[in-house]
Image 1 (tube, rainbow, N blue to C red):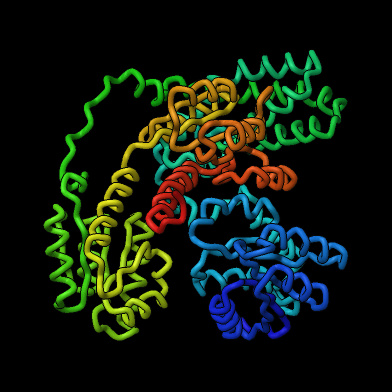
Image 2: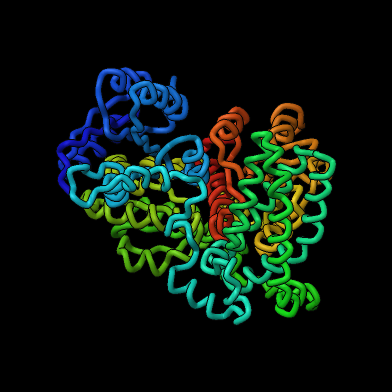
Length: 571
């Protein structure tokens, strides 16, 4: 695509990052200006017209979110809607929904893949002179920015996999017109989990419908809004889109105090809700969830050295050729009871040996820069995907070549010659402990006033984590008195004590304010998002996120926490 009409502002406090982005844009004929701070960005946007802003999230003085707010005001005064794309480090991946809900059009993860940047260019800088352009294209960016949009990367299954899972569903389910089976299976992961979610939904209809009638009768609009809000989330999760839209309409009416509409529409909504339950009645015979609960527990498979590398800690040592450093390191690590697995820096050998250890040491040796770059790029991807710790050792000149490569963002520590062996071995012991803790089965607390959603997410997470569910903030705080979880998932909208209240208590009054918190909600309202930012959560998830997205965000959170500890970023 050649689009010389477009002009982009690149904002990043690192000069090298600005140069790389400008170079990529130039290859597509796009003019760019550069700013190294939020204040400089604001000044440039006041005097120049831009079609797109690439804005770094983490900058000194004025960070990306604060800059975003000011830019929105400038563009609003001019009557323009300039897309602003956040580019942030890997640790920001778990907050993608938060960035989008805050107002960013899109999020790119550093180091930015040129192909991903090109795709963004195709969306946000489409030439209006192009005969294929039409007004709907202008709103496409805002559609993408919705925190409920699920990208193909986020989905756990391909389109082909989803079709195969739908084929496994019972015939009676496929003829219910109100159900989008593709959306439901995508959200839940596979046909069995989808049937589980449907059964949980089916079992709660009478209770929730009666509650909603009671709140309407007593004009308890706060509880009415909360209950219809939870209904909106669970209906969207199972693919009951029409019912979900009606619930969203009633929730909006409650927020806007349009009580006459609520009184007029609730009766029809509840009738549709109960009729939908009747159409799902055959689910009782398909209740996989209940059948599994009745089955006797099976003993877990015996641990093996293959699945438990910490019986004897292993280190994968990668080097070009032989050398004194390698022999010395091997000798000292072996004496410290490590199993050292040595392989050459050849891609096929690295791919084959990737599962042999969770700590990787790379010695670039005397390789030229291009070979070092290839090896580093591969190691960066492997260590990121497999949550491995990566270290470098060798001559400082070779380490510097490696650190100038793409994979350097995954390096925890470097050990240039002469290596302090005692420090090196102690670090490897510490890294081994970090990896062991990462593989430990974590404890996750979930707080939500919707029993149906608690059942679904407990079912999703319990195979991987020790999950404790609570229906209220007070119950969860009582639970904290006996167990400190590794992660809290807090629903924002609950009666009596909502997610904001809980965050405030934990962050300011609780004895351990460092307990990580990911907010779990069905609301992506920008005002709420900015309120959330005041308390600095560790993540933000929509209840309508597919199962695979939720599992991926939680896994990445624990993996990135380990990585930060390995680099000494947090204590």
